[in-house]
Length: 67
Image (cartoon, rainbow, N blue to C red):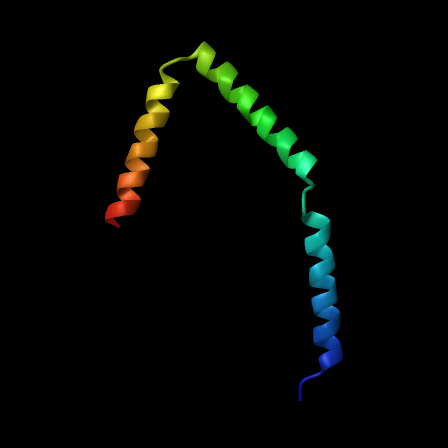
């Protein structure tokens, strides 16, 4: 009724694809550095964004707390 060879081949394919999609620590650090630099440039060129981000963070936190 249940063919174990099919499930084993599916599981091995699934684990291989997950391993191939994982990012290394260096890639993750580089992505965070790029995002941080872009955010700093955006905040320097348009300072009111800091207030919008603080307001948005507070709003989302309150929304999650009361729902």
